[in-house]
Image (cartoon, rainbow, N blue to C red; front, side, top):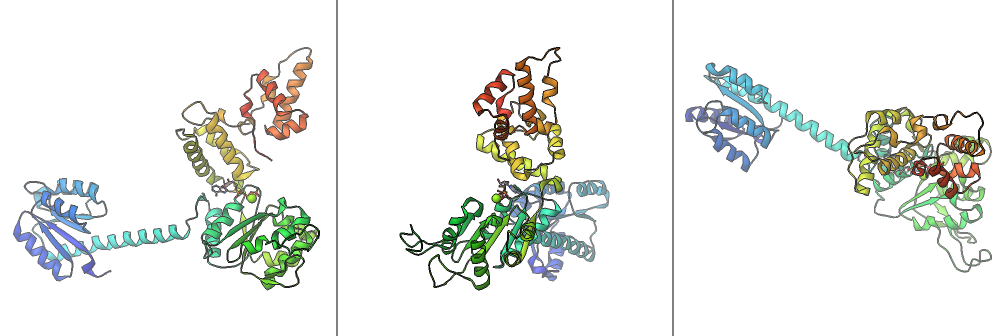
Length: 462
Ligand SMILES: Nc1ncnc2c1ncn2[C@@H]1O[C@H](COP(=O)(O)OP(=O)(O)OP(=O)(O)O)[C@@H](O)[C@H]1O
Ligand SMILES: [Mg+2]
């Protein structure tokens, strides 16, 4: 137990004798004691400073113990309360316990008995304090901006991330598309010692192979035709900070050699320069491709793979941690609502169970898109099943729109075909237009003719 002097106790009784006896005994034990002759004065003292424990008589003029208890539980719910009562009023003492008092003691008092219960109450208080403190520490340690999830998989992953933050190790983040790799890379940088230094990200897949080397490592003037001046590479931009190499699986063989060299020696060589440059850069890499397979196929250097693989972080697909779906859906709904200035109630149970059943090939990014679209589309005060894309609703729209005609007209055939393709393409506008060989405008016009809102189309890639 902590030193008693750290605990403050307020003694409330209209009998001065009782106050005096208790104050003397508890002060002897080292507690920090105050007194008040009734509930009202006690409240004034409490408003001025909080107490760990209040010991109060039940029957007092001006304000009794029951009312005082009620006010304390509102004003400072962490304060423990012990009620003192004469034999005749045990029932109301029991009532007090129901209303949050810690214990009641019957009069006439034995100071030993009082002391016993005071210590018990404060022990409990100490325990609560400790739990709160631990909770705060844990929250602080694992607080990663915007990463939502409560599943074991995510909690485990964040635990690993929190360790990784405190090191300078190279980290390889793997996971399907849309599982949050970029989000995690950012979290690592901004929770690391390098957080106030540069965070440079580069999507290796977006740079043509022949430009990767100069983009990453820079070049000197005259290194090749067109190299009119020296160019700093992204590695140099990231010096003392973090470089995030996204889509690492898409790097050219020449770039891979240079990356390996950096990871082994901590130095780079600009294109056309013989002198190496020593740099202090922490490398994070990510890929949604299976690097092991690329290594087997000879498309990715095995030695580089092992250098990157020092600390692998694997982001689980959303379908393997469905318990996070409600949390994420709620998070995205709130975000889009505030962005669009809408106010919505929690979504219908039916809508939520559709989301829980779906496979989510596009993972969190797909969920995010679906919720955004639903927030825009819904005409009610909450998202319902009808606001979700057809492929999530699991309805076969073509089958109920098809009319049972003896002879199918050309127009009907076209309509059936368009709807079939849309279903196959999960209502993705881009892929459907491509498969049908028509423009977006034509597709929209047709849907309107069929009485279908073109806003149902999904705009995402995939
Ligand atoms: N745990 C999460 N909590 C909240 N939002 C998340 C979470 N994970 C991912 N997101 C969001 O999902 C979207 C996709 O995440 P991100 O871009 O990090 O995926 P990725 O793994 O890099 O995908 P890709 O392989 O396609 O590049 C982002 O908008 C991101 O903010
Ligand atoms: Mg990404």
